[in-house]
Length: 348
Image (cartoon, rainbow, N blue to C red; front, side, top):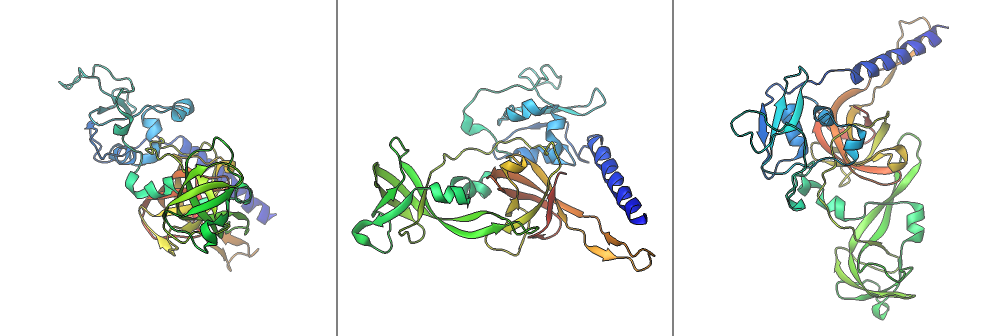
């Protein structure tokens, strides 16, 4: 009976804490400015951190709902962001052109029509560019259906830039630019050992010269040796990452499965892979909390000798920028300790 009561106490305490967190008022940063002029090089995360103690609550400062988050207004250099506290609750707005003397004239968020290339990115773009333009994860189904190199020019063992390769499963009307990859190590969920996918080792790029069976492609560049049975994937169009900062609407309980570069530990601006993707409800723009998983200990002074699990210790935040079916990639934005494989990732 005491075990059941203890479990129920922990359960109700957790629910109460989550409810309390959901109703916690917005807390401004200690030195939050009254306004900020957006300049080239600004990021959404950086601006949010100027105003808020918890940058992931950016959408609450803008009073955005779930519909707005799907199609967020964009922020451009030259715009003036005004912190309005007149109602007693902080709210951020874009000032109008007539607001040069300090008086607020137009305070409704609006879209500034300008070139898309001038948009500010959500996070430092240069850090994650390679991860946006290259294949990262392939699942078993994708591995089976991806176009495959079935022969090489002059039957060479390895192909390099300028060589022709012959590829199966490229249909008529396919795009011209492709990337070449090889399936690498399996990505496993540390909790149950489930294979979530396979690392996609980027080998180079190729241009489609002729469709058919087989199709003919020419290697444009090769970072590693390219050979028979390597796979092709359509080259994506790089885009500015401006997914709005927001926390998941539901509870996320995941783990870090790898740290890019085969590192044993990471830190700020490290790229990490986490278990869970589109099937788990994760999407680009989600901000998640990093925690060191609490250890289970035995309390020898308790008569029932009930094992006790220590609470997770939150130590940082990460930003999800690319999702696959069962794996997502995220950038560590804040970390007060080393990030390790197996650390808990959850809703902040």
